[in-house]
Image (cartoon, rainbow, N blue to C red; front, side, top):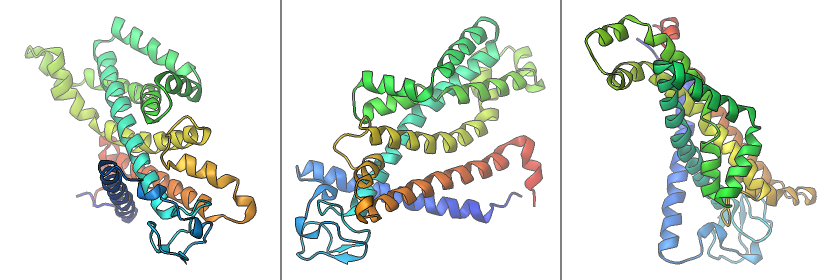
Amino acid sequence: MIRPRPRTVLCLLVLGLYAAVALWAEVTHVRDLRRDETPVCDRMDLSARNLPPLSFSVVPGPAPFVHYLGTDNLGRDVALRLAQGTRIAFQVGVVTSCIAIPLGTFLGLVAGFFRKTADALLCGLAAIVASIPSMLLILAIALVAGRGLGGVYWGIGLTTWVGVFRTVRAETLKHRESGYVQAAVALGYGPWRILLRHILPNVSHIVVVAFTTRFPAAIGTEVFLSFLGIGAQGEPSWGIMIADARDRLWTGQWWEGLSVTLAVFGLVLCFNLLGDDLRDTLDPTLRGRRTA
């Protein structure tokens, strides 16, 4: 019997908290759009500008009366903007992972199973993509697709599948020579049935672990792109918040930059630790080391 590590449970709880915040932010964002109202995170209260954490608004306005993480130079509540940034981060992580991971998994299965011409062509394509500086390629795709989250989705998704492809291909090459695959071939099963019904379930642990690594990496890339002004437009992405808070650090207004930095650090750290634990748990070669 495999028992979860305490840090695994802790990481899941923290990630559940992030997900709950992102879900709440999504609900409020959709509600404000349907009502044709200014999003709550963008509502300004000029009488409450640059308030430190745990401050009260001088005049109660549309923003919460208590500003738990302070306000920015326009009187916007930092906690609400941080929550909306969490929503954007989860959108980027989920959408880009849903592009890169299925693409890398499918191409890896095809290259590893059919080999020969398919393997040579796909490995050559992966080598070409990997040889181009990833950030430069992401910037190029994002600029072609247009500024905003749509360009970020395609830019990150179409440039980060190579690692998944290579890992899945290597595992498929190993399983292709195993006894159960040879038995399926002898029984006359078609190649696609063997790939989807036999090999894919045995490499699924790679897909799960790849998600836990691609997700935070995509978030970090989006933060960087938004910091440069190429990512999210008109929304409080974490990158935009860092860019806005950068100039105010010199005047002692540290709370916005620190809040975003800690939010990014906590999310990336939890995903990395969770990925390590899932790899140890799901990988058949390591599973025996963690038995009760």
